[in-house]
Length: 418
Image (cartoon, rainbow, N blue to C red; front, side):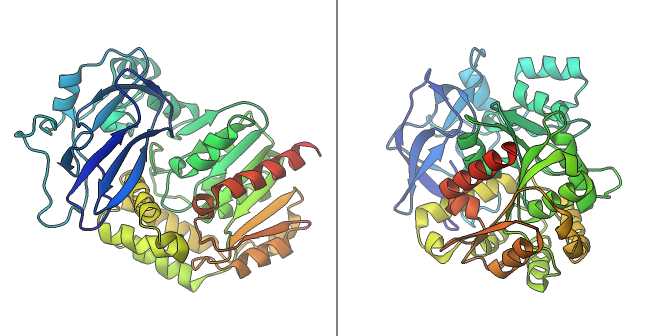
């Protein structure tokens, strides 16, 4: 049971959209939950089979309670064993929040994982042994944080320590994450575009399933080199970067021009920005990324007023941020904030060297990176086009997902037709 609001201590399962045994796809609406009179649709976080449900429709349970389990297709699943190994991940729970207890027959006891500390499917353990991968270094995306075969394969697909996910076929689209988020932040784009393109998304060093550099030497240039590694063998690619990811995309186009066939720069910034610097610093001063105060402080900077006014959308965005925060160590965030601060103001004079088709996307309600900065970038890159999405905040990929997907498709087709 996710926490949908600051004061939430329990939630009610309104309806299950699938039954145990059903084959489900990532992003499919799996169930509807209610808390504080707000109903929210919960998406499946991965594809597979709904192996079990532990809470019936109409039942109210504390946050962190085990609701259901998704297994890999064909995987042998132990319903009771899984429940016993389940460890809830609820950070910053409000005072007095309840937790799963043994007196609820529908909510099995939450206990600690075995001494090894690693929960992994048998097939994942076999794959890790074969490929020489340390399971303790992998962030599991399966039920209850369980490591799947896909998790193991993603870690090795992008080279040493770089987690890359590639789906679909056709012309390549490379998605570069913004500050403090992992590749799941692109799900609205990758899920929609993989039917027509080969979509590539990866985690920055130290974020998600990608290992940090041993000497903490991340710079925008090293992050751009990671982008080149992630797209190796699938170039030139249409490169899409958001916020800090736009800075990495610009750097990639300058140091590896042959790897880039087109650019989509979403809410980019190029010059020193005192407000952005102050906000990033404040987000890295919390001891834990999942701190509820940190999550709540991020929302107004990411989202427009109209989006924030819709409780369901706002709380769904908060829940997504919490989930990603669990995979974004504060140390990595500090390194990336420092890298961006050092880079800003160093490349404005080089934008004229970018010769590929370029689209700049800005949100008219963006407080973090005002549209004027996008206008500046668009003017500096020869032939670049500016698209301002009216009413959208910084997170235009969330608020205007369909329009962003259309614009990316248009630019990608323009790039490949050259």
